[in-house]
Image (cartoon, rainbow, N blue to C red; front, side):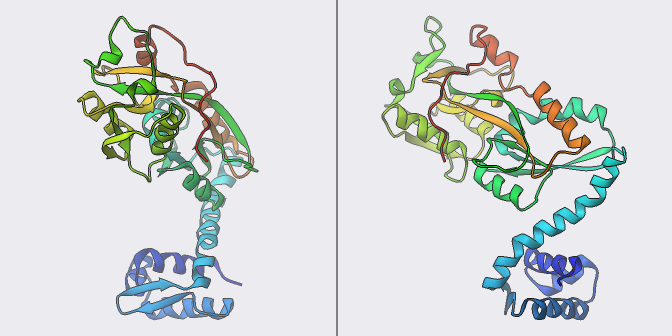
Length: 317
């Protein structure tokens, strides 16, 4: 049976791209590393890596084994932490998997109060571009808890946080945002605009494309960016409207923002692979209490209205 040390060798060789650099990182001799790795290959019955003149490449067997090796190492690394938490020792690390936009718009308000109650717990953050990618990482054991849309058919524990609302952001002089108009906009009225869009690997691109499709058009693109804060800045500078979660709009924002009609929302949850331990449970409670899905400065500028819970266009699958 493969040992954890052998699995660590496999993961490190792949991450470093060579046996030499892996041995240096692990502080072992290269012959010792090679011997243990050959033992692992004999155990599985075939080669896991192809040795190339400049690096290594996973074989089919290696590609099959690698995600399970990462998951086993992640679980082993958390075993001591879980035991200490169960014993009432609030130290160690809390591993969080989040979407980039949630890392910007939700987590800062949550982690501040939570760390005051758990000063001995360090945070390790894993940021993802898309919820599908994050769900796969969680299945592989990457983190204690993920924050984002709940994957269909998730078998672990889940804690609903609330509904996050998306807003159209544009520049201050945009006629669509004239003061005498209601703080809503039909996206079809912006069909002739060029939009500040997102790179295809950003999950936010799906929400913008879907909302525009529901409105009956395909957005023309002024430029693409990966991050919501960048899109907000470009939109405020007049490059075109964009669509972002309300909580990514900063205080003292000088541009304009409007609610799309029909509204665009997504339900957020904190979810785990197993039942949450006391530290993870306290984080989920803080997430529900402090998550600013509609910040006060945004709500005030939307004429004091509360976050909408109306039905949104179907979320991209």
